[in-house]
Amino acid sequence: MEGAFEVSERKGNPTVFRYTNIVAVQKDGRQNGHRDGSACPLNVVVIGASVGAGHNSAAWELQRRLQRNGFSATYFDILDALPSILRVMLRDLYRPLVNYAPFTFNRCMASWESDSSWMVRILLWSVSSQEVLGQIRGASVVVTTHAIATQTVGRLKLEGKHDAALASYLCDAGMHPLLFHEAVDLNLVPLSGAIQECEKYGHTAVAINPLVQSIFRSPIPQNVLCGLRQHLGLAANSAVILITAGSLGIGRVSSTVRDILDQLEAVSLVVLCGRNTTLQRGLPTSPRVKALGWREDVAKLLAVSQVMVHNAGGMAIWEAMVTGLPMVTYNPLPGHGMANARVLEQSDISPWPRDREGLRSALQHALQVGRRRAPFCAMEDEQVVVNHIARMSYLGNGP
Picture 1 (spheres, rainbow, N blue to C red):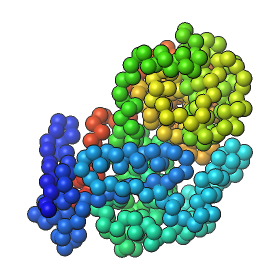
Picture 2 (picture 1 turned 120 degrees about the vertical axis):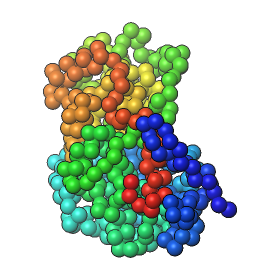
Picture 3 (picture 1 turned 180 degrees about the horizontal axis):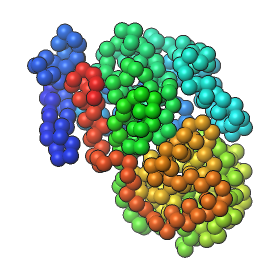
Picture 4 (picture 1 turned 45 degrees about the horizontal axis):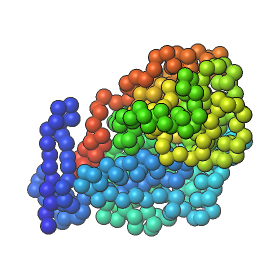
């Protein structure tokens, strides 16, 4: 059955694609799909990686948006194509390396600057090509949210193993060479300042709104926020500083908490420890500190806070950004954390104080200024990313 492929005009976003069934018609009248013109479902495969939570969160949000707009969109975790031992190493060794051997982690990041690195070669050679090809078979477009997926799917495309259009959503503000591949048709970034970062490595990119759930853009009733404050035992007259360290609860979080307690008196600290129960139990003891484990109500916690302090990693950066919550970077993670901190500072999104006195000044300024409209992307409509991917499917490849 032939489906409907709608193209409409919209101010500020001139071409909007929406699929209302599974088959589209190309400009020359052929049905979108195989090169011989035979029909195939308008299928998108989104490939993430369960290293932390950010890559998967972005992938799942993109999948939801595509499905709401009529695409057949499926998700695949690239780690599932790795041998069990490598899968466990990637998931479980990241946190101890960052926490206890930051120098080693920085050396690893430096060595990974090239795809000729022996560590990278072992990792990419270990990915099951057959597993990946089986997952993307019949796809019109493949979208990756992690470097391993990008390198793997890009290599398979250059080898002629598939002909799907390939897009990459880059989850961080700071860039790394392995995030790019010559076979990628479109790089998408969640911050306009990241475009220049991509250009440093010889690649172009398009800025879109961060791939976060719509709940972070929705107002939360005041009575709900008051109830949350009471539930957490937060003083009614105190400003709330939310401290985040990603789903793994990594970095110098305890040091950050102590420095804020020493520098500011009339504030309450809510610390998101993720799944790190050791961190949650080991934070400085103070009636002003509320240590929380893994939470599903982050949107409410952001709404009840006046500023967020982060270590330049995790989905919380983008979630806070779309709410307009002021952010301050402090004690950033090694490697990608410091790269993110630099770009966020240069983009006037999140100051990066290097010492306790600078932290005090940055927090006081953030508390005084309050929420603002974040300058991450001019286009508001979450349809934008769907439009880009629909155009890739419609034209065969490229933006």
